[in-house]
Amino acid sequence: MNVPIRMLGIATVILWVFLAAYIAVAAYSFKDLNIGAGEPVFAASTNGELLFAMPFYIDNRGVCSLKDLNITTVFSDTEGAKISTASTSVPLILHGQNTTVFHNVSLNMKDLLNKEEYLFGDADLTASITAGLTFAELLPVEISTNFTYPWGAPFYGFTFGQPSFRLINATHGSIIVPVSFENHAAFNVTGSMNTELRGSDDSVLGVAQAVFDVPQQSVYADDLEFIVPLDSATPTELRGGYFNVYFSTSLFEYGPLVIPYG
Amino acid sequence: MVEEKKKQSNKVKDLSFKVVRASVTAILMYVLYLLVAALLAPVFELVPWLAETIEAFIVVYIVLMILGDLTRGTIFQHFFNVARALFLIAYLLVSMGEGAVSMSYENFNLTINLTMFYAFAVVLSLLGLATTVMKAISYLNERAEVASGFHQP
Image (cartoon, rainbow over the protein chains, first blue to last red):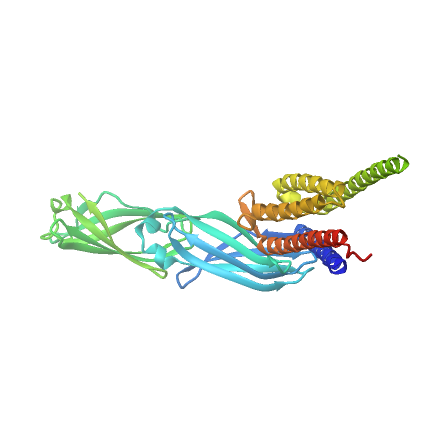
């Protein structure tokens, strides 16, 4: 019985040595692993998507390979609701290999721009990035981080000024309304704005259209002119009512935005 | 009288041999720990609390080992060896927790899932426990054989 017991003892010791050596090798490999992230790049595509590209630099100078690298990004709105999710997978990064992984996330702006708060107000979106991989064949490792992405509204501070009335002729008058906004978005805003001037009884008093092409971080300021027949719109009728504004751009449609006046 | 004195002298010799043996084993064990600790320095840099818990574990483990060596040739040696194997299993199970080690650096969180490592270590500890139990059985068996006069050298 002594020989089998001794053999069992020797086998146990050898396996312990293997386990310790494995951990030491894995730890050294992990120390020699360099993972870095480049600056995220944001760009707007023509099909209404905001593209977010982030390069990851992985320099595996350790002796262990990296398997099943999976980078996942989840964009959430200010209330924590999920807006967009994207994943990038790399099946194998061999030891000694220097790799750059491009992680692309598309953010559907149509979903965001259907909400008034993102169309007219800036917000901080949250991006959670998680990178998971199997290290040294047996050890699943996960690195996660959060950062905020400042969402810039395309019609930030959209306001109508005080309407003014002027007589054109005996039958028609002109109502001029100054309009202004700032484009805080990461893209140029090009499109048109159709505005209905309605009285307090919901009747359409006049219609005006403005075409705009506002570059990023620029201010738009113009006047909307409503030509109205004098029998339907007099200065007294301008004391109460509202504007219905319809936005139409290559990226999104929105409306009506109701702005009361008077 | 002379034989009694001889017996006593042998006992003292035996005890001093056990003490020396236990001391040498303990020193060797500690030196081995220092070597392994030096190898695992990168891990300890990432997880500072790990070094402290391992040190406490090593102290208890060496004490049990010394006691086992001092009681060598008696049934108590096997008690201490079983206690040592059980302590190792208990330590692994307690330190395992959820099986993952998490650490934070600036805005980054790193989580390493050590479940596989712990599972393997626990299996090896169980193997160690089985070996010590078998040694105890073998010891009792030999004792019984000697007592009954069936012992064959």
